[in-house]
Image 1 (cartoon, rainbow, N blue to C red):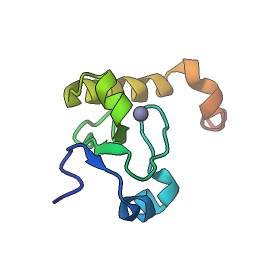
Image 2: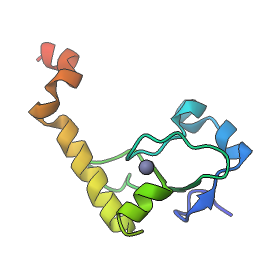
Image 3: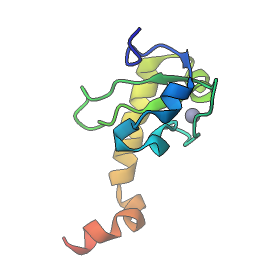
Image 4: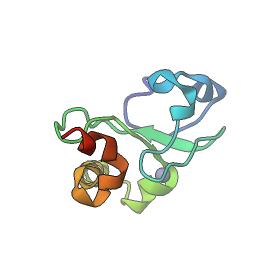
Length: 101
Ligand SMILES: [Zn+2]
């Protein structure tokens, strides 16, 4: 069983302790920020094939349902989020980058 196969699965203690992206605190939903707990349902969303929206976020059950359990919709939303955070609307969060321009 490959945990990166994109199917919904239950969070185990092993998942909780895994050093996701170098830090087990990164085991959170990429859409709502929910920190996964034991027995939460989650899935891995592959997005690294989209040049404008990398990251391969995790998705919680609530967000999965919110997007009709449709990974293409989730991928589109991930792309939208990436675009949005690069937008000037979010300048405050990137002000250090902006100051070096
Ligand atoms: Zn979520």
